[in-house]
Figure (cartoon, rainbow, N blue to C red):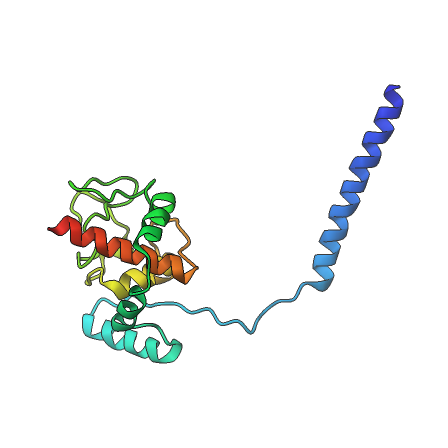
Length: 183
């Protein structure tokens, strides 16, 4: 009886091994390397005049939205969906209530129009602490879309919000909570 179970187990494991080996060989033989894709990156420029010129150049090249376009897109964003998304994806690391309390990440209770990397009781990465700019709608959009690309060296491990609807809903929620907490 035991010999039959051993043969059956060996046959199943051999089939799995053969399947995995065929996947590996198939990937080696038919893998397409997509060299034609161009990766975009954002430079961190310390001089604000250079930064503005750099952003304008990049907007012309890759059609990044400007602050007015983001405001227009936010008209259709849903505050309730933004709140749901933030509670599910952001609240484990960030606090959104007053008084300001930092968690793993800095408090986002008053993020809009706050100087980037400016909370005195939070240790920011060098990438963010060296920036001389504010969290406006455009900077929030670019950072939340691809944090590691916009601020190379950021401590934030989140890969970004790829779905535009979720991105805009989140920004609308952050704008709302900032305005509410400022008053």
